[in-house]
Image 1 (tube, rainbow, N blue to C red):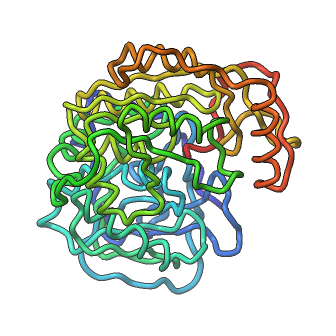
Image 2 (cartoon, helix red, strand yellow):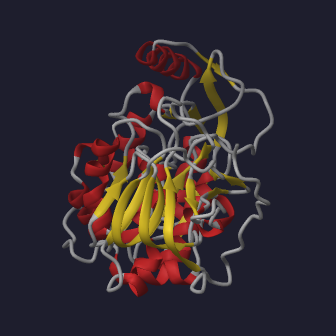
Length: 382
């Protein structure tokens, strides 16, 4: 039976520097194998007598992603030495850049005291592969210690468990200690290299991943303004960081790479964030960029309609946004991100129908306009 625990949503605005638990003989419990990717997992850190270590809970907005596990039965694996707990390791790029690095702020004060850092899988799907994918990102963000991803319950000789210092929604601006660590370390070992103006594109992703209708037209319009179309997934992590460090003007639809931009960018940049779905994620990305780097960032929500899968009930990471290109042009012009005063025309009904048919064929489904209320957050941050 799982341990009972009274969950209280953390407030990180005043700082988290004093919230590092040190547990001797900590029991690190990954999610059980064979469960698949559940939205909430019974996983975390227990004391030797089975009490949940509160600092090890990972939150997404008002909801804990990890809740108290039961004390694992039988023999445990043993890990000697002193380690730091980082929480669940997500395979999803956007969630990695928010929830899997939410404790890296503590590496600064602890780096000379620990032998490495510990993750548990978000769910038990190729944990070694996921660790190998994200290990270079973690290093580039300033966490230079060895990293392990524990797939079995393990007794750790000595474990530091920092509280979450960053996260989705109300935690998107990060704790002061988190912002300080990021500004001092994230991407600093990688030289800027790339165009001064970039558009972060989703047009080369599978149709089921979602974007805005007419994205190819948007790319052409921005290319006419001197922008280079950048497809992050086609580049290794160091090239992505180099590109974001080099760019002075950035436009992108709301998507995961903007989290990385917020981590490695600087205060001289200007960013326009085009909403591709309801949920105000464009505003959250803008808040993060402003808070982390002090840079100018503009949320630009000019959605006319959301197009969602035929069996869906609301916009999500798979939906497509129908954007008012004329209004978007005006906002980009006002922000100084483009110069040509000639307004951009809206997509015609025929062009919209053609786009909807194209993405439906690509995603092997059909899409319908969403008629429900605006404002509900999508289920994922991608």
